[in-house]
Amino acid sequence: MRILTSLLLALSLLSAPALAVQPDEILEDPVLEERARELSKDLRCVVCQNENIDSSHAGVARDLRILVRERLVAGDSDQEVLDFVVARYGDYVLFNPPFKPATYALWIGPFAVMGLGLLGVVIMLARRPRKIDAQAVALSEDEERAVAAMLAEDGKEGPKG
Image (cartoon, rainbow, N blue to C red):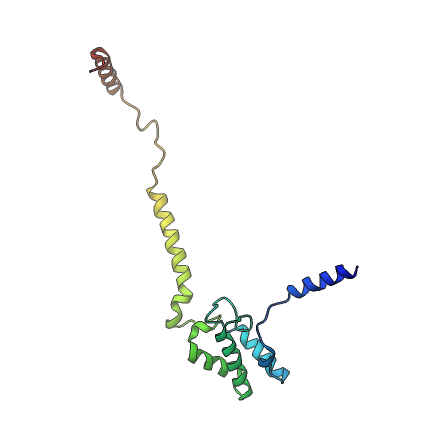
């Protein structure tokens, strides 16, 4: 029973979020540390791109975590910290960048690509050959007689060698 309990405990530890924050980065003031963690959720690691800076093990993410904590200790508000980081790394460092001319591609790009893909599908379907209506291509009686006459002449001549 103890082995099963130990195994379940080990598995539950694996399911916890893997944070890359090192013990030497953690602030002594729990209020400031909580603010730093909240700010870190909004900041993207510029190397990993899919992770926030608390989850990333990249050196740049560590630098950003330290920078955020230094700014908070210096007395900056949350917005001032974000503004400082954006001034250094650009809007791309934010998981939710503002909608402005410099970030139009980030906001509109996915919809434009999807629209172009949809347009391509519509064009492909429009150019696809349609089923042929048997009534529309039926031969008239005169045409059928002419075809029968041609076939009869071909049968009389035999194979040419």
